[in-house]
Image (cartoon, rainbow, N blue to C red; front, side, top):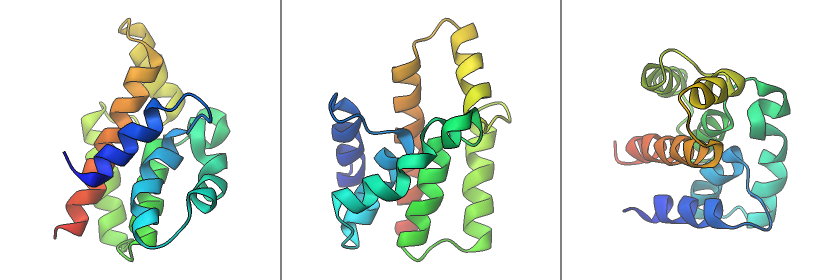
Length: 130
């Protein structure tokens, strides 16, 4: 397991304070470039829960922010990362749609969201290794 994935797992396991999906994806990479934990939490606060409206998945927005802080948010990288997430989830990128499909499959929310976070971290890490 990578240091980024280890950090994301640590954040997702923390009960208090709660870390939303965007914070959990962004933090491991932002901390690498010198952002503080407090800065990451503030920047990504409004992006959990699909920007708190059920729209774009927070794990995806966190991943795009992570590409940005790493200087890797080119048009091609952002489009590719987004498409890879879409392909993994039957074309869905909206938090509300993802959660609805998960609930209809009889699955619990937290483990599902955790898996999205870990998937996004792994995708971002792939751009670092390029």
